[in-house]
Image (cartoon, rainbow, N blue to C red; front, top):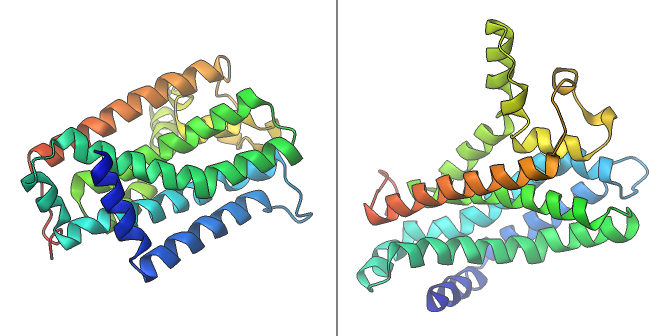
Length: 242
């Protein structure tokens, strides 16, 4: 698996425009997240206002350059080389996580800790939410082996709360226990009350740390299973290897 990660990292670093685009998007995302407010001051509130869109953009950038390997038929060579589906999926997930953490999460969280005085426990929960977004998007890309799928998964994530809200409004069902497990609601819950949209104000924020940890484990397990099965069964979209 280490050899797969080294080979992928070598390909990305020497891919010219891909490497430049990845670096630019990660830096831009971090800058917008950190300095989103008018005073250019770092705060937890300013982070949460931009976290979903910019974290997702960074995750899509990382996913795109790694999933692009399928267009080069490298996925076929990895399987033909005797690597197991577990090794292939894990190598891509771990390398992407390394890139995202070093070039995006680390500078964002360090500056939040130093300049925003954000507690270590809250920083860990924010990081866990970011990793859940990343695993969701990257696993989608690996499963369907096409760069465009990562953007589609971003749309699913951006509007994840809406179906629950509409269902609750139409049926009168209390959907707050389910919505409180979603990453967007949890990120808002970590911030101040002013950030909560009116439709989310009734969502219970008790035991938020437990909810974030449990939901992150569940999402990671389900998405990893999807990526693993697709690799083992050799799912191929129409444009994957063209």
